[in-house]
Length: 439
Image (spheres, rainbow, N blue to C red):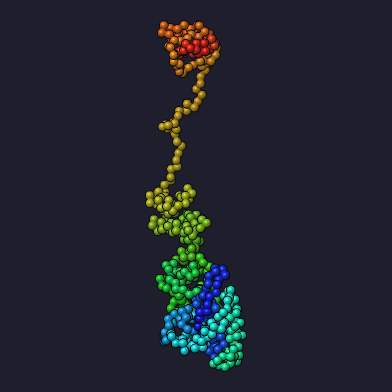
């Protein structure tokens, strides 16, 4: 088996031309061949070509002689070559043996060397394909009819007929469909878990800090240490977790498994109020995010003892205060046995800016005289010439041109029937220009 470049196909979705590679399988005796087309030369492409080849030949060859393909051979050497983990896993699944050709030794696989040029010149040349699927269907038909039924120059027989007579009966049976796994190198972290496909899987504590080989397919995740199986887990979706309780050290199971009931029971073991307080802390839509607060509460038990923390939790529950910081503050000040003083009523009598209650009472007193309403004025009017006018001719001006308070009061009483309560407080000054209407 060997890869060869064929040409290009224009991708209908992107409009770009993509290079097409052909993985060619050639039976060493009959020269019967099968061609698998792909856009890449990855391990997944090689395994997909093998699966299609077993269906075409209706069997698995006992020995495969590949070229030094990177997905198959990771370290090429004549004696101590190294095959990839993915290829070894697939070879064990299908049951064949891999015997790679030597580097720069085309005589180790002469049957397939000439087949690359034959496929490129006889099948691909002059053809135009819209999709890779269309090209694959065409080359499968070409392998069975055209290439398989030609008279081969070396064998002087038709490859398909010779294969059916001599080789088909000695092939291995076709295995079940292979679930192509993902192989990766992972590290064991402090929580004794490794990450595979954005999910976490546990390992025993003795592997802390070490690197392991992981094999993940659709159903299982297998972890290996130098080829020795360490642990098998069911495959989890991204963000999931699979933890074997046997992998967690004694005393760390509640923390690793996020067991809330165990955490509350541990807190209740130091006192009933501590357990109730821990349950209220974890009463949250995301209780695992509040576990650290409960661990801090248990740390206060180790620092101050169970009895002071029990008393402080009881006092906090009475006041409906759920805060580990408040518990710690009470213990630091030794106030867990002290009843807090609630704020009392504020005395407004001695307040600095408060008004006296008498200012809000009705203060108006009867200032109405028996004859009418008192008339008062809070300002004075300036006279232009300094002379005053008596009202209705009854008030007489004084020597300085001003009306006396008594005359103003008498004039007002005679003119309007009103009474000036305290005429000594008012002085009426009117301009001469408006003598009649001023009053």
